[in-house]
Length: 205
Image 1: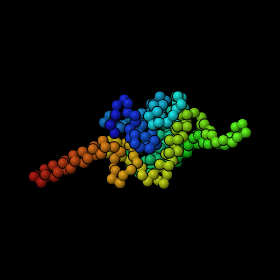
Image 2: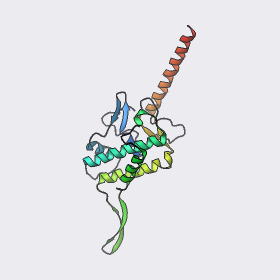
Image 3: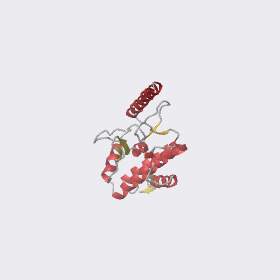
Image 4: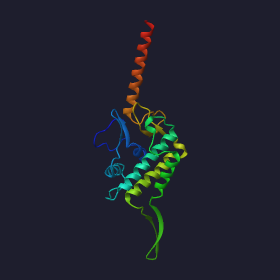
């Protein structure tokens, strides 16, 4: 996947939020990159995907939790798509560990509870530890839905050099982006021309 420049707004803007979280690991001709280098990167990502931080900045602990969640979702995505790409390797050792991490993150989600207010019952959300934690919990909950039923619509993009995933929204869709589709077709064309040339050279000797 090509780098879109300093203001990337993170790749695959039409994809579900968990896919966009996974896309903070991406690749170009220089190699594989990780957009999560510091807590400020998490703040920027939450803003880009529309999760309200309420002006709160991520702590180092919350940043590490986000990285664990991201790596866990990638580990589970690799599992459900049978992804054999080298980049599918994750810092999370096992599917069991990844499942546990996602489920634990969801527990931090704000949930509605009844409370008594001046004699009247009302339903109000119980806040999680912080808006950052609550935002990550929402991403984890969406990841549960995406990966459930064995992630039937989730796909790994096998364009040359790509490390991303996407949701197959159309029966003919094969790639995460137009750029990857173009790159894959160019690679196939090159291989076809090269094979034809080798065949001709073999028959003339």
